[in-house]
Image (cartoon, rainbow, N blue to C red; front, side, top):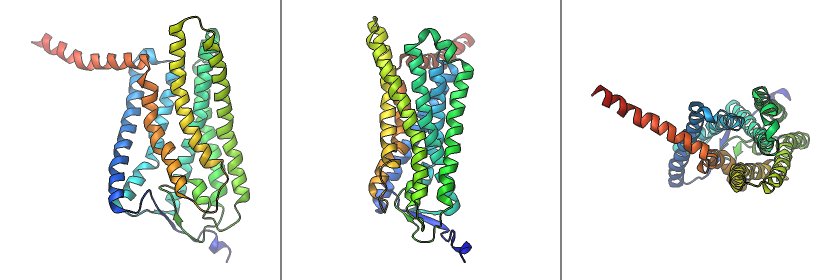
Length: 320
């Protein structure tokens, strides 16, 4: 009898962002536009880094991973959100919900760890420039990137595994626009204290450890920048680090408020509003923040435009 009740829920019903049909259609158009801009923006960043040899540095190596991750991250949640907004029906099978919960959590965890690796890279570049080439060689870059991806996916196995071992035999209405672990956990029909403790411990490793690395790195970077004699050097260092800190503040602030605050008895609309920032907004802003005031990227854009815009004209004039 107990074995039959382990998982009696066969599907969940996602509440989505709104129940009003006109609002759903408006949200569909807005979210679709943001999704397309996010994918195109991050693809452009990856393309620019690949075609311009001057961008083949550790900083842009990590940025390539971040942009690739952001494309995967939004694709793991937003297309399903769009389908539900268009259909007006938020039904999702238990298996698909579990898969989405794991993939989204894994990619989000990887991003948190990768941002820590990027902060460490900036610390070495600015505070230890003479050792930078050796300390951040190609093998070290691969080690940090692979460690971020592997740790994010392995820790998520533990979190999602602890959640799915609980029985889901009661309500199946999820007050969210996708299957997110803290929200789904609230629907379990058993005591979740142990699982919540495991998730909190993993959040400390995934969020607070890299965040402490980031804060330490940028404290040392700030001290180093203030000692610089060159005004142009200070401006370049400030510009590079400010973009990274903007991403860190938005991402970590919203994720920590979701995964490390005391959990209430039921999911609220606040959970959905918080999730919109790190699921929809941050992936869109990343390519903008990293490229808007970046002169290296501006030169790469100019180079691509010149190559694609002028070379066909030169060939045409030669043929004429």
